[in-house]
Image (cartoon, rainbow, N blue to C red; front, side):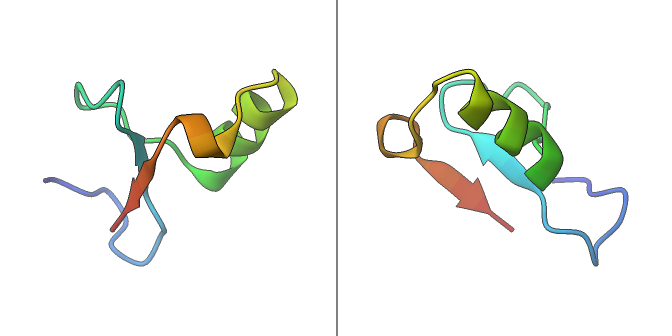
Length: 45
C-alpha cells in the first residue's frame, strides 16, 4: 500500500478498502454518524 505520510496512522474500513484510507478525524466523523466500531473492523498500519 502507498502511504503519503508513513508517520501518520492510516485506517481503512474493511467494507471500503478501495484505496480510500481513513484518518482518525474521518473515523471520528463516522462515529458521530452512529456507525459503531464493533460493526466495522478497522485495520491500522
